Structures are given as C-alpha cells and as structure tokens.
Amino acid sequence: MNHQDHTRGYEPVRPDEGRPRSRWRWWAVGLAGMTGLALATIGVAAPAADAVGRPLTSADEQPSADERRSGGESGKGESVKGESGKGEPGKAESGKGDPGRGESGRGESDKGKGKKEPKPKGVPVPCDADKLIAAITLANARGGAVLDLAKKCTYLLTATIDDGAGLPVVTAPITLNGGKHTTIKRAAGVEEFRIVTVGTGGDLTLNHLTITGGQTDGDGGAILVNAGGALTTNHSTVTRNIAGSDGGGSSGGIANNGTTTIKHSTVSRNTAATAAGGIGNTGQLVIKKSSVTTNAANAIAGGFGGGVGSFPGGTTVVTGSTISGNRAGEAGGGAGGFDANVTVTNTAITGNRASNGGGVFAEGGMLALRHVTATNNTGTFQGGGLALRSLNAATVATVEDSTIAHNVGTQNGGGIVNLEISLASSTVDVRNTRITANQATFGGGIYNIGVDATATLTNTKVIKNIATSNGGGILNSGTVNLNTATGTVVVKNQPNNCVNVPGCVG
Image 1 (cartoon, helix red, strand yellow):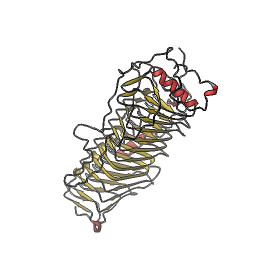
Image 2 (spheres, rainbow, N blue to C red):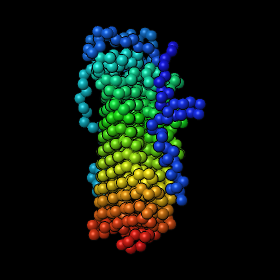
Image 3 (spheres, rainbow, N blue to C red):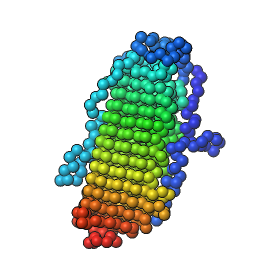
Image 4 (cartoon, one colour):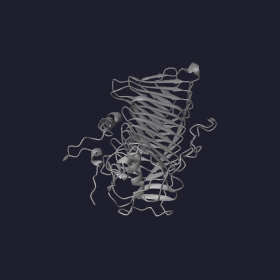
C-alpha cells in the first residue's frame, strides 16, 4: 500500500541532502559553543461535494473501515496512565519552601485534577482508528466538528496519513472528547510518525485523552502545531513520545510554532534528541495547573530545556504548575529560555538536572520568576537553581517572592549563577526571596561574574549556603547591590559570607 511521507520537511540537513534545517535547531551551535567559554497511510475518500460546508452531525454515517483495521477492540483498548507531577524520588517537594518559611500554596499544582469543564456533545466515533481518521477528514472538509471518542479504547495508528502524522492534518476547529482510558497511540514496530499535526487555520482541542507512542525524526514527537495553528489540552496526557530518532529532532512531546494552551494536563516521559524534551515553543505557549515531568533533552551540546524549551521569538507563561524530574544535556533541566520571554508564577521547579541551570536557564531575552519554589535541582557544572548568561543580547531576570533552596552547582553557583561573557549585560533583580542551603565549590548562594553582570538584592535572605572553596553566600567579580536598608541579609554561610561584595561582612 502506497502512501506519502511528509516528515522530511522537518529533518535536519544531512551531507547528501539539501533540505533546510529545522527552525528548532539553528541556535544549538551558538549555545554549545559557549560551554568552553563558561569553563575558563492509507487513502481516505473525500466527502461528496454537496457535503462541504454542512456541519458534521451524529446523523452522518461513518465511512467503512473494511479496507484497513488498525486496532480498536471495543472496550479493550490499551491505556497509558499519566504521571502527575512526580519527579525524582524524594526530590519533587511540590510547593514546599524552606522549613519554617510557611509559603502556603506556593508552587502547588492540582496535577490535572482541576474543576472539570463541560464537554460539548459531539459525534460518536467508534473504537476504530479508521473511523477516527475518516471523521477528522470529514470535519476538516465541513469546517470543524466535535467528536466523541470511545471510553476504554485505544485508537491504534499503523501508518502515516498526512504530513508525517498518523492522523490527518487538522485545518479546522476540531474537538476530540475522550473519557476514561481513551488513548490515541502509534502502534509499536511500524514506521515512524507523530500522532497529529495542526496546520494553519487548524484549532485542535483535546479533552480527557492520552497521546502516546509518537516517534519522528523531525520536531514534535506527539504533536506539531504549525504557525497559524492552535492547540488546547484539557485533563489530557502527552507521554512517551520521541522526537529526533535520527539524532536531530526537537520537542519530544509538543512542538509549538503557533498558539498552545496546556490546562490541567500532564506532559511526561517524552524525549528529544536535541532540545525541549517535553514542550518546545517559538510561538505563544501557556501552561496552567499542569505537570511537566521526567522529560529529557539528550544532546550534550545543545540539549536545552529538558521540560520546557523556549526559543527565539517565543513567549511562554507557566502558572500554578509543577516542573519536576526533567533533565537536559546542556542547559535548563526544568525550563530554558533562549532569546525568549518566559514568565513562571506559583510553580514548583524541583528535582531537575542539567550542566548549566539545573532548574532554569536563560540566555538573552527576559525571565521572570514569581512565587516560585526552586528546590533540589542540580547543575552538574553550574547554576543548580538558576543560571543566567549573556552572549549576543542582554539577559534580564527578575526573581520575586520565591525560594531557592537545597540546589547544587557542582562547580559554580549552587543557588544562582549570573554570568556575563560578552559586552551584553546580564542582570538579575532578586526581591523578597530566600536563598538558602544551596551548595557549590564557588559561590554557594550566588555566583555573579563579569564586568556587566549585576545582581541587585532587595529584602532578600542569603543564609546557610555552603561553598567548599570560597564565597559561601556570594562570590562576585561584577556588581552586587545588597540594599541592606530594605532587609537584605547575608549571614551564616560557610566558609564565609561574601567575596568582593561591598557592605557584606565576610
């Protein structure tokens, strides 16, 4: 049976081919280069012409599935359970700050158990992958539809249908309503493809669904949202998908170039060969009351954003969520921003790991953390909790009403690293925040390095941090403004409180 495979437009350039690079990977060479500096189908019939433009209703007959059966034994479908915010054992202390701090409700996530939104009634789709494919095709032709998928059913996809995906490209407003144990899955042992692509003009909503098993050598192991497309997930799980099976792809779970909203959902155990293990964003991304957990961006050079990766031009907003147990080979184990605007509020960032910025990493652009708990993260080189770095553009960060505690930077900056390595400035403004019990070789609490590196502390406590060599509280070669009149204190750090910080008693 012949079918057309459209995935090749998302593959990396190979020596013997002239295809363009994926837009998700062009930045990796520059990012990787900084490490050294930091260290010194089947065919479906088209609907009849007189049906085009008429709304899809339950009275419409579903096309026959005789030509292709692809799983779907009614009531016996396989289900994949979504993880609800659990990170590494003993490390994902959701919403917990320092003992005695009493940050009630900080960083807590309902882990997908928010108030259920009413599902619009739709057209029933029996537990048969062919009928799901046909229903989406018809919905596209008629300008959209609401489709009710079967409970306790796995829609098992076995071949590429369109644009490198097992389902037709979504080009209209389409809602897929699932239920208890409703799953859309790529079958094991078949050709590689993602589950679905949302095209320009498409608006896909997933309610109570699990999306799993997608695998592509391009971007978006499960879902690709193209520019001009939109995706919304409610009470859904995107898990165990792979991007970059040839070593070059990005965004293991979801690749967003358009507009994506993740609500009361879980993105877990997805893998990218290069960057953005869970979700990658160059467009508009909102994550609300959700869990991004145990995803991986594997590349040692360029592996960026283990949980969430935000790329040039992207705007990412995370609120009321958990980012835990993710890892990245290069930078931003939990979340990373590269010339992007990233805002994280009321969120727990716990148990993540990367070479630079175990919890969060930013290079260029803007980063804002408010009411965030960053705990038990590890920077295997530097920046256990947070790493900021400037190169070709200024980096501006704000940390407010937050806790950065029990993080480890193996070499530099257990709590925060602020590093300027070019003429562009790197600035961090820390307000009403507690930086405590972090550990590194140099700069247990804060490591602020570079002529144009500036850290300003307002009503902030830097206490009980440890440097095994020097600068238990703060090690500085740039500018540190303590603002002690506002209540900032640097005390009880080992072996000393500060190195080269005016107004700080060593």
